[in-house]
Image (tube, rainbow, N blue to C red):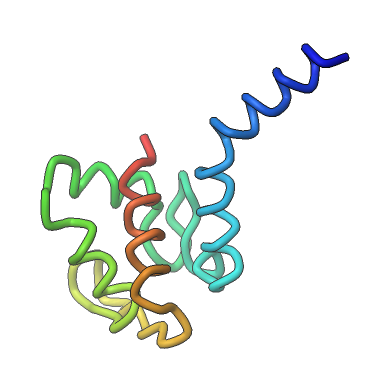
Length: 101
């Protein structure tokens, strides 16, 4: 029984951050326009991660776009500003998006 609990706890520790960040994306309504692996209104998160892979400034740039919005990078549809997302949340969301493969 103890061994099973340790295995479950270890699995939760590994999966926890990814699930927590996806939960944050859902809570902040990001998933209304984005999906992890397919284009909706906006690009797939995996496409964003691929485009900015290796860019040391990507977390800050994406966090800024999450909060302030943007246009022209992924087509004609603009991304609206998300003032309900604070600085720490925006950076956490950006880091999560960039971690997707």
